Image 1 (tube, helix red, strand yellow):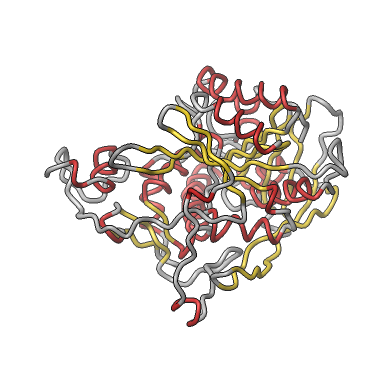
Image 2 (image 1 turned 180 degrees about the horizontal axis):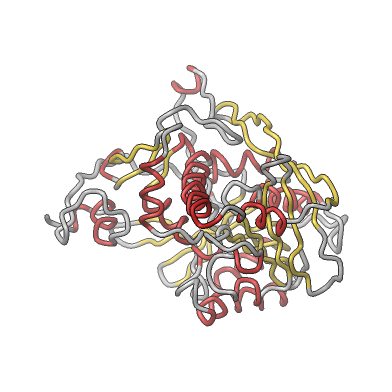
Length: 410
């Protein structure tokens, strides 16, 4: 991962991309990462993680051995007379705020996860991708930091370069491209350096994901930790070529299975195994799946089943794993005493620092602080006045009704 420019990391959901990047980031915070910053503990900024910050991401950094005082989450807090909330950054419009965060923290690594979900415009258009990521790459050069863009593999195709979701600019605009895949025959996880403009060696490296229990104030959480294994003769290209063998029928079956795996992996990484349906569909869209692919994948899942139901307090629809979670990330095991104890007050006002900018503040959140708890004020659900359907996750009107029913009438 070269400093001063961008690296794209891509693979199917659940292949260990984020876990391995967290391992690299953790070493950077301790000054043990080989390279230019060895012996120089440095800060890391994480933007838009697919997994919940407090219940999942913080324990994963703990398991990786990170110095949490040097791990930061960046979000935009919008404050008006009647409403206050947070949103993820969008690029290029929030590039200035990102630069302020870099100046405040002294970060030497920024991770966008997933990068396509954090851009304005169409991830499939070269110009839109370059306009969104170009200013961030310029910041990486200006502050000599590593910009890591996490992406997904699209459906179909068997070559590594054509497998990347969205426009080819996600590969062309960066100076390093790391591809991830799991060899189902051997169980080996592989990372292949598919592109590196600053080196001649484009080798492959094996790694494994082990489960590790982390003690938190809310109980014990089981998370994944990456262990680097060293060079391997197996490449991601070879794995993809083997998976493509079998003809169109098998390829279509693989695509269906991939969508189901993506939905399950996404939900298993969330607290209590559930997430807003719109978030799951949006993440799938960034990975190259259509909205119907994601909805059909949810319906086809049998072991375990994935339920679609109304969230508490009328906060829209959620998808939830019905059976107990299995795999790397599990929800906290809370004791009776911890259930009875009052929640810890970690409000946005206790973030490290805020920067006012025309009614919007940028919160730079240390990893050892959890986001504020959501409001418990009940919201009365309404039906969309446009189509009067209850399970329409991509409708902007539906989402707004679910969040602010007082502003709409059916």
